[in-house]
Image 1: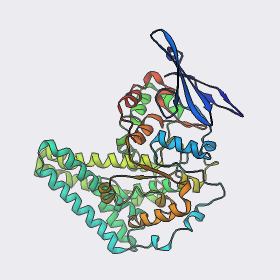
Image 2: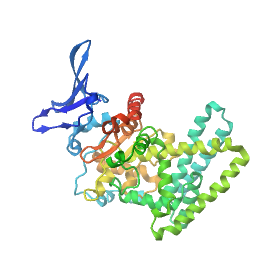
Image 3: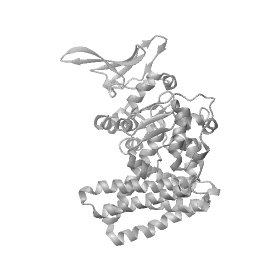
Length: 442
């Protein structure tokens, strides 16, 4: 990594963190402010002669990130446009004013987006059941070289089961709460996800979105975790780098099966959910193996389950993770900013949106979790009309994923995130590999 130092622009001083001394030569980079834009001045040697090159900051990989308070940058439209291009976004929103409350945003939503429609709710169940059954049919008929496509369809379809259970958790599936608990529990079973434990933890995610320590979803890595032990450090680097699209498996194991993580009044419902999951494993898995063998269990259940976890990790990661989205302490945290500024609307290919019941139309879901999935688009249109300039918007693309996997790692109060290859460059080969080989298309 090149050394970076800051030059002064009028009325502003930008400071940059130095890279390890062993990486200083033969080139240097400096961030300078020219004509109101961040430009990279790159000094390098070629054929024994010194050369200078000025590059826009968007040409990443040649410069370490500047230590800049990002909030002022969000107030500058040109800087936001540049950041959007750098990070793979269509739009990065302005900072929501401190005096705007979540209720202010919610009050602008039309009342009909909160209405439960039984026909639409059960229609989503029909879509998920039939599409998953079709996926199992494809797996049974596909030649080996087409199995990845069949697994992708079946795994995406079963992700729709999770979204149905997700609506049940938020009491937006049915007016009958017993029906919601039954449907939610059944919808989670093929994924061996315990319904009640997830409900308790997910409610906390909504109450504490992007709050340091308290949010139960993706937290930045703490410096003390990186410094704790070499083995843990390597595991974290892999977990937040190459295998991050499957790290929801670790979250599933760590958060939902340990009774010590729940309050005494939650334990009875937690134990019922765990009993249902273990019953499914004790009965369902042997039946699959009896009919199709161990290879059949791998083929019909495990691989679609891995695809589901790819989407579970990717969706939740993209929803709230970007270099410009901060995690804040409880004292600094603002609910409206966390839910509106701190949530990303990301568009995926239409077939994925249909099978997953629009779960990635995610901003309105964080304004009010009571909005049913089939009303999210109408709610989104309303929010975009009234609060559009504060919203983050992206199409799912390589640059977006590359930004998250290679830059959003260790917590820093001023910069929000610092990459592993800046904090521990000697052990960050997996991150450098991703930077080198992941496509950068947006």
